Amino acid sequence: MYSLLLAIIYIAFVSLGLPDSLVGAGWPAMQKDLDVPVAFAGIITMIIAGGTILSSLASERVTRRFGAGVVTAISVGMTAAALVGFSVSGSFWMLCLWAIPYGLGAGAVDAALNNYVALHYAARHMNWLHSCWGLGASISPFIMSHALTAGLGWSSAYRVVGLIQAVLTVVLLISLPLWGKVNRVVPDDHATEPHEARAAGPESSQRGSSHVSLARALRIPGVVSILAAFLAYCALESTSILWASTYLVNDRGIAPATAAAFASLFLLGITAGRFLAGFFADRVGDRQLIRGGFITVGLGAVMLFLPLETDVLALCGLVIAGLGSAPIYPAIIHSTPVNFGRRNSQAIIGIQMAAAYTGSTLAPPMFGAISSWTGMWIFPLFLVVLVGLGLLMSERLNQLVGR
Image (tube, rainbow, N blue to C red; front, top):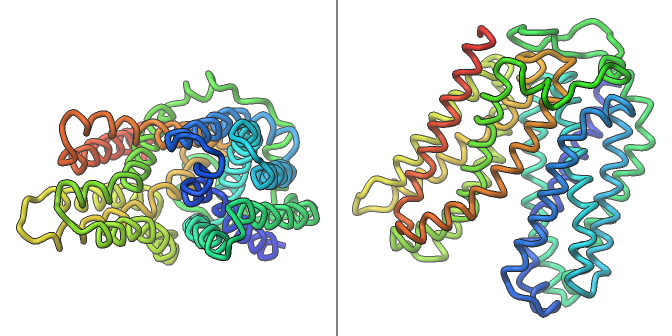
């Protein structure tokens, strides 16, 4: 049961990464067909982000009532319906309408699945699963590219990914009996490493128990600190993905093709780094992965900033920053039940997802506004500030929980 459900969850993480790059990859063609300004892409992403934040905050109450399996299946079904809706949309307002279930489904499944894995699987699986998400996010631009090259139009790419999500929904519905039978769980409050524990009826520990309100969760020692650390990490990740290539071209004078290649290596570094981190995550522990990850990103940012004649160090710094980023997100999520208790983990992970999407949504335009005043040279310093905030807040959490 353990291995079968784990395989399904791996497939789910690959599939869940597929939609996340579609808007960006297809927008140039979509914008022309819909005859709207280029900047309107931001409206769609803001609607999706808003829905994701709302459903993340509500995920604890919903998951306690229905269970992670049901919430995951329904949320993926909502995402599938939204993607198919995108594929038949002939106007911009229809895209905005379908973006609502898209965001609501994405946030709920993110929180429910991450909490389930944090509770019932070891740290290596959390890293490998998030590597699978990166794989899915890397595949979808190729689906869009093939659709456009073949003359099928951007809508066919959304239709293909929507049908993949629909098939996954059916698989998840069939697998529902397995979700309550997995008997491998992390230990209760404040243990140092996950291990195989007693058969506890995993979903029963969350379903039907009392609701942990937002105000109550925020009063738990260390929660505000980890939210700040998570927001800082997601802010630096999204800012790097959007602005790294522009920084290399405008400030370092690197050729656009070379800059684009190395900017993509940042995302590939995250995906590969999570795969590699899975082999030693259980031995190293979440705390060391978070600390080492932030320090490595900081090193990469410093390499980007050094005013040397050669650009090799700067390009390598971007790759190092991607590798350093890799284990931070999975380790923060996986350590939540250990830091705050299994009973509180769903509520806190839901809030963490909301903080993550808030940072990812607000940081890139904030940096854009700052760089318009100061110049692109400030990009590495912006990353260093976020690294410092993330490292400071994560270390504060360690002090508060006594680890």
